[in-house]
Image 1 (cartoon, rainbow, N blue to C red):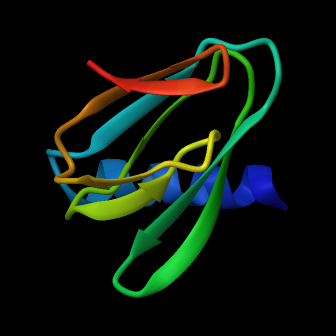
Image 2: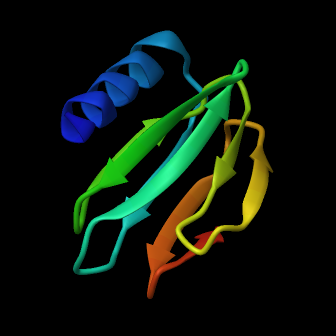
Length: 87
């Protein structure tokens, strides 16, 4: 179900806006982000090597290590070693 949800978010992000944050999971295990957008929270599960576009209009993200970050929707994020870094 999380994979379907991640795919749906990716499709909506690509179809809804030219600008969106993108995240790539460079780890060898699934990493999960919690995305809060418009007051609703969604789990975004990223499989190893997967890249997803999300957050086209700004959002808050809880990273795999528990940190919270505000995004504008134009960031490129890389997850490696369980840590997310904005590039």
